[in-house]
Length: 74
Image (cartoon, rainbow, N blue to C red; front, side, top):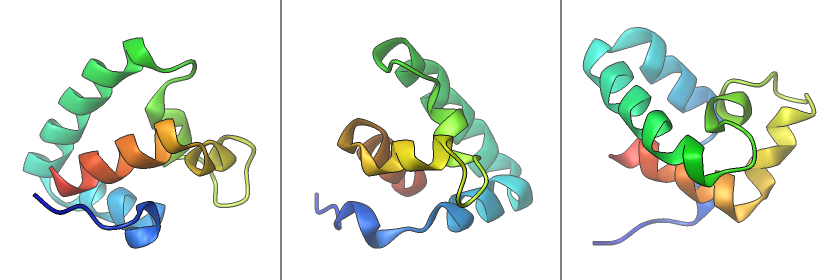
């Protein structure tokens, strides 16, 4: 399995898919529930944060960036 660099998917892509496709939303919500116990703050706060907001900076942390990318690709 090959995963691109964490910069491979802008957060806006995940937001658009989440809002458009119910199957993506269901799978992403499942991932969020599974990973939130392993992260200091909920992953949803980072993924759905305003582009230049404080929580958006969490995606620079590999724990959040990689988890978000995995959720996008899953």
